[in-house]
Amino acid sequence: MDSPTGLGEVVVKSEDDLSLDCGCTPAERSMKEYLTKGIVIVDKVSGPTSHQVTVWVRQIVGFKKAGHSGTLDPKVTGLLPVALGSATKVVGALLSSPKRYVGIMRVHGEVSKKQLNSLFNELTGEIYQKPPLKSAVKRELRKRTIYSLDLIERDGRYVVFDVSCQAGTYIRKLIHDGGLILGCGANMQELRRTKVALFNEDDCVILQDLKDAFVDYTENGVEAGLREIVHPMEEMVAHLKKIWVKNSAVGAIACGAKLMAPGVTKLHDSIKAGEGIAIMTGKGELLALAKALNSSDEILNLNRGVIAKPSRVIIEADVYPRIWGDNK
Image (cartoon, rainbow, N blue to C red; front, side, top):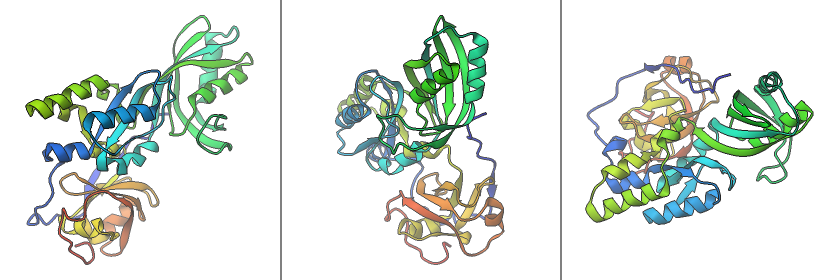
């Protein structure tokens, strides 16, 4: 079962009013704004907590505000997205995104390859899971989806596996439950997160690389290194379906207005009513996180009425003029 990353096609509803030229593309932001609206994908090492890694990132760039998405246990390594400045408003979008891990499981008895493959097939799909005792959430039975669970290799009782799963899945608990199914017990030896939403290991950097790039910028005025390491906050919503709006509608939405049908220029054709989406400007800036009130087909046929309700406005209110009305 593949991770749900298909967004569908982008379809046009209406043309934008290009006479109103405001904002800029994420890549054209000044270095200061680029940093305050950026995210760093840290390659976390075993040992420090996710909070400590976030503190180190904050200290390197000299920011008062930074936040990570998806806590990794101290011994777990791999992708730890750390949002900077105002990009922390968007970090929640990654919390609910699919994750991928590679790990080592140790089985406590003699188990054949056939038994392991059968187990992994049984655990793929929708499962029930109760969070472990040491967790930050309420310990109640809940459903989670395992998109894929594959055996990579084994050496005696040590089994290397690759798992893609829904956010909020406890891999250590998954392995423990798998051991119960096998009848001999099992525990997780090592775990590394390899993917969060559309970020993967190619996007990872170590803290020293971030430090070197920041020093090169502050002391020598060289921006290239930082722009390569720091990603625009818009990449945090790359896995979400989107609606793009007219320039004349941005200011009103930035001030708290709902998105009206006349303000839409284009959208993904697979949006469902009630689904979480991202609202974008014509220049690709993240305007808001929102809940779609209509499906794509309905939005394309509507000429009036509210079609999305913002849950978190991201863009500043003074970037675009405040033109009120039906999101013209």
